[in-house]
Length: 284
Image (cartoon, rainbow, N blue to C red):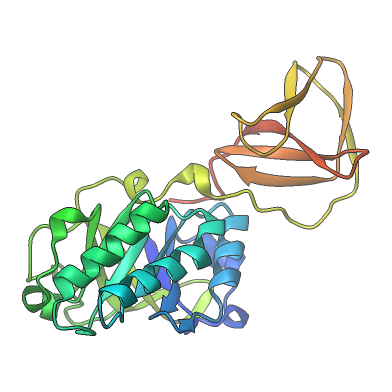
């Protein structure tokens, strides 16, 4: 079976040109996107993956393969990871720990984790290779989540082949050979183990992502509503629009749990008004 909510993790190996984002987004609840491999190699397609899924209301987390050779290098990787990913406001930042890039990976990954936290990452987790778990000796208690891989026969389904290295994990990557409509290739599929989906994926952080400009629409307000400076119910108000007033919008976006109308302003700026709560496009 494929456990729900369905969570995938992807990288540049899943080419955007091969993905029907509309179709694939309907199959999943969350996606974890690779940002980098070490400090020098930036994933070729992470921006496209993130933007396309966020447009469709899919919340995202991000990950980076850890390759630091000493404490200073670990901090450099963490800094680049943060700088490359922060604009997308991911809900979780995962360290992908699958090799001994330095002898003491425990202290090295702690330097990496602390640097991310100091930079502003709210939740930082560790993906740890199951077969290296004991030798890597990562301080798992310091992280906000632990993610372990074990595949069993690896036929694309979860058949109870749980991680053997530890019973204390929050996310299980149970296959690297998953198949879902929208992508004609292998996908990593993951299942939750204890903590709720919302702990890892902030549904309110799926935007804002603006689509193409639409034809200007004019409508009459049915209630008073604030026009705000950004797509956030806590953003500063530009003005209070009154019931019965006619307003114009030429775009929409999804952010912070709401569908927003975007109003062009005479000074070239934009105003945002909440059109209603947004619960996603057919997500599980």
